[in-house]
Amino acid sequence: MAARCYDRVMFALGPRLFEISARRFLEGIQQTHGAPARAAATALPGLSAEIDQHAAAVRDILDLGVASADQVPAPVLLAGYIRGLLAELTAPITEPADWATAEWLHLRLAGACLHSTYGVAAEPKIC
Image (tube, rainbow, N blue to C red; front, top):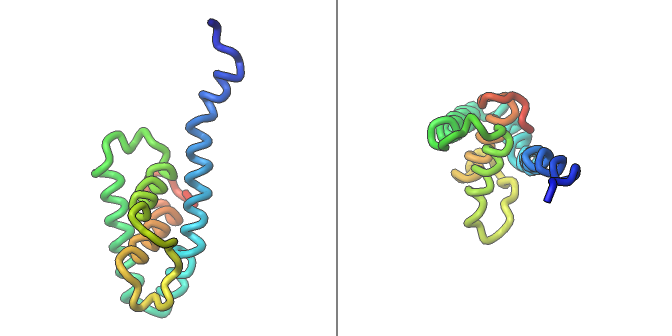
């Protein structure tokens, strides 16, 4: 049976739809963790350093720890990593009450947002 025209269009759109979904997901994390953490880090230099360390760790994990990472769009890769972090949670993640005492997961999410915002990965401006 010959392939219909819309079959080829949907196949071509598939990866793009994953990327659009990933970007929307990252925008949500950016609102709950990225922007608030950056705002808090302006007053807390130690927090800024911690977030930078988490951003570097995320970069290393995605660049070195994922096979064929260069073949996956950066937003999809980053969103997949964050979704993996959140998969084991039993309750929705929210912004911490005080960034000065934020837990590891909050700092990692803030670091991932820093990673996506400033283009530590190959593709800048993910979120």
